[in-house]
View (tube, rainbow, N blue to C red):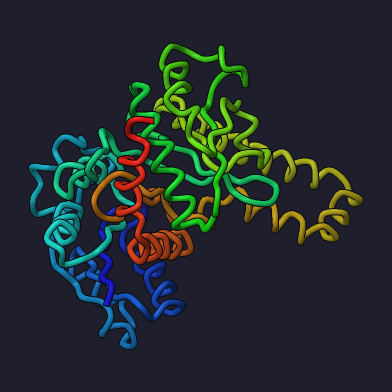
Length: 330
C-alpha cells in the first residue's frame, strides 16, 4: 500500500492541525498509510483508535523551526524533516508532506532524494484561482535567479503536472512577461521564448492579469517574480475581503444584501482560500514532495496529503523525464 512520510512537527501551530488534516484524509481515502515523524508523546494521544493501524509513528525530538537557517537542515539528521525525507530516499515511503520550513524541505528533497534526470533545478508550483478553473504557476520561490534553460524545464514540468495530476489534456503554457509581444521581456525571457516557441501548446508571452483570467493553464516565471506575485495575490485577496466586510457593516441594506448573497461570498472564499489547494508540489525531484503553508489548518493538510497521494499514484516523474528528453533539442 502507498506510504506517505509526514513531517508531523513542522508548521506554525504544532502537530494538532497537521494530524487532524491527516485524519480527514484517511477518512476519505482508504488507499494509503502514513509514517508520521515526530514526538511520540505529543502525537500518540491525538490518534483515534480507528486510525492506529494506518499510522506509524517514528519518534524524534528535533524540529527545524521557521527561524532556523535552511542550510542547517542537512546537519540536523535527527530532525523530523530530515528523517521523513530519508524514508522517501530509502524507498520506505513514496511521498513527503510538510508544513514546516519550506527552505529546509526544498534543500533536503533536492540533495537527499535527488533530481530527476534532465532537471537542472526543481521548481515550486502553486495553483492560482480564476473564474472557472485554476492556473498552475511555477516557479514561486525555489529559484531566485534562473536562466532560459531553467524556464524551459519549468514549462515542461508544469505541462506534465497539469496533464497527469490536474487532468488537463492539452494545457496551454504561457511565459510571464511585461507584454504579450515576442519582443517584450528581459534577456532571459526573450531567450526562453525562443526555446519554448516550438512546443505545441506554448501560446507565447502572458501578462500578470492572464494568471487570473483563465486564458492559460500553466504560467512560467523565475522564483523571484513568482514569489512576489504569490504574496501580492494573497495580500490583495485578504484586503478585498476586509473591504467587503467593512462596507457590509455600514448599513442595514448592505447587511441584508450580504445575507441574500451568502452563497456567493462562500464561493468567493473557497476560490481564494489556500486551504482548498493544500500545498505546493516541488517538481523535479525523484519523488512527490508537497510543501504546505506554515499556517495550514486541517483542511489544507488534508488537501496537501491528497496531492501527495495523487502524484505518487501517477506517472508524473516518469513523464517529466521523458518529456525533458523529448523537447531537449527542440
